[in-house]
Length: 291
Image 1: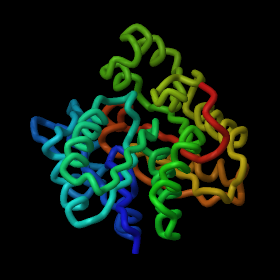
Image 2: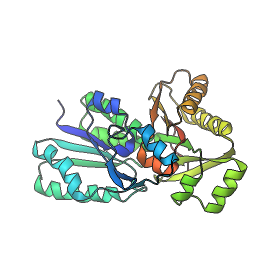
Image 3: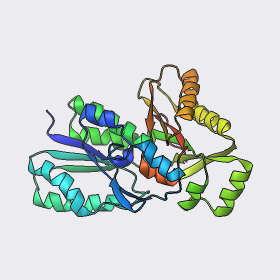
Image 4: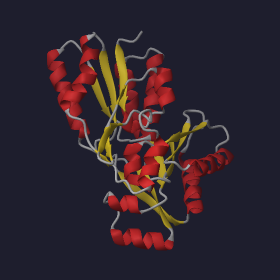
């Protein structure tokens, strides 16, 4: 039995089945859809397909941050029970949410000075964050101490990578990631930006290709270039209600990386809000990010 708890947030898109299997506590992040606030409980309250169906029908979901009071409700019972906390947070460069965690941490450590509360900024979101959580959980279950697990994540977080392709540019435009002119021209020319998570923990375009087929091929090529050990970690093909393309991408990856275990999992509402239905990505641990 460990003397600390390993936690993360739902912006990791940690598959619900794995959350349950490994009993990983998850902070559920809020989003609003059709005027109603939800908490991203990994597809349990509102399943992922229903979320994307609503987007296709014209709904404009928004995401928001949690305040310190809510974080205290998650963290204080753990510290008061005599356990320490290792929290793996989604990238500080994609939201100011981590500042609320830092403030909560300071408040609670003042109240429980004998406890440890280690916060790691993973510089990731969605699948890459999940892969770091799963590797950390593997060490956690093996009995490794909190400092060693935290240090592994710090040392390896830039090796967690993702390459995304979107189906419709209007969602990137709506989120301010591309201009209306770029969206219109890109749609006309069938240009597909390939997004990746950068060394700074931001999302940026790694390339642009014409057509969905070339976009999937580009993702496969990047995986072959960057995966160093096919058995070190699982690969995650994640999708925003685009199962057919996710299965196609998985088959393409299996041809090039036959020894790698690859899971197909859904993209949650946070990335989904900004990238839109039809988004597909491959996430893996390999070489360090170069962008």
